[in-house]
Length: 533
Image (cartoon, rainbow, N blue to C red; front, side, top):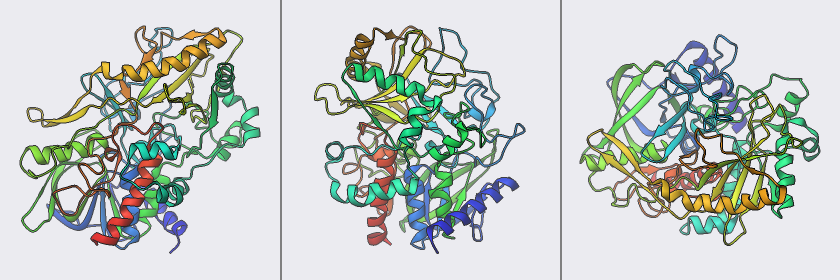
């Protein structure tokens, strides 16, 4: 069966499950539910590494159960939309919060961004720790539902620096191209980009960067740029041009629930179970892994518990989720021989957000595409290597603000620890560790401001700071490849236990990380299937 045929079968199953309100999705007879279910393989999570692994297991004929804590986002609400937009957030926006928590906290120091909402299994979660917050996507597709879709492949020298134990030749010859093709990465038509109103904000930032001697680069995206062109022409319902991004996109975006996950379901060997939280796991004497799970509803009520047993267990719950499960297993004695380096080398990918105040004649536009397509590329600077997304402020009004998410090569690393008192992971990262990121970003944007006679915005983050480094969209590390695992994601000390997500990467990629996570999962799954099954 062709991949496109499998994908269509999987999309049909997802749509049917959503229409019927089902939390278990399969194109074949579903795994029998009970107090204890046994399957050959379990994948925890449905983000980039997890979805990739599930597809490759299913394609190899391995019956696999994929567990996702969030819901399936495939059914329109009373307003006719699946997701809510940034300007009118409602309960769909946030994971069991009473108020939204967007990255921009204010405009002109006025709280015009966030809203009170009812607690619900919404699509975006902001996890709070002492001096760092972490944004994660909740739902089938994980972070692919809530990110800006920038599909950036790191430069080869950077990859070799990040993961020196991985041969870059097959990564760039085979696995990166495969990941980009599967994810549906595409680029805007340059002529259309230069003419469309929705990227006026990006062209303005490009002009300002060039005046300071900085180059820019087009960046592929998983959003369908042909669909966006038709949005701009008024031919199709708007999504990227209707302030949809951080709380999901109704149309146009090739998130994982449109690519890898339906293809996995279409193999007939993968079953998806949603609203299922894995609380812990253990290993029995025969090597079987047994997971303890809770089934919740969309209001957060626990509707039942169950055990799931498997021979092969793949952790794809993200940097924090996978590391927490392993730390709990080690520190409670369930898997006491897990490596000492577990939880180490965590980083926020050098994320820093900042805004610049433009002159009154330099307008950014009333309609801004929520999907970035251009970046300021200063990665070759030996002193201040920075890749800065030119980000939108899709407020529906002229803000005279240029916004950026700068990604820097900050060498600082934190760690994740298990707190027995709260039975949860705690992120140990000090705000001061983000200062090298601020310094690098400031070196770039001081020059841009000086060349253009502009200044920083101090009104965007709820106080007077110009640089916001207290949150990240790109958590990385905790189960680092070649340290906690072998070179292919096998956890050291335990057979048939794997990690397949961003926790394998030590703290930074220098660019948006999801293409690297996907390509690495493709590489690792190929080797594991060849040798372990």
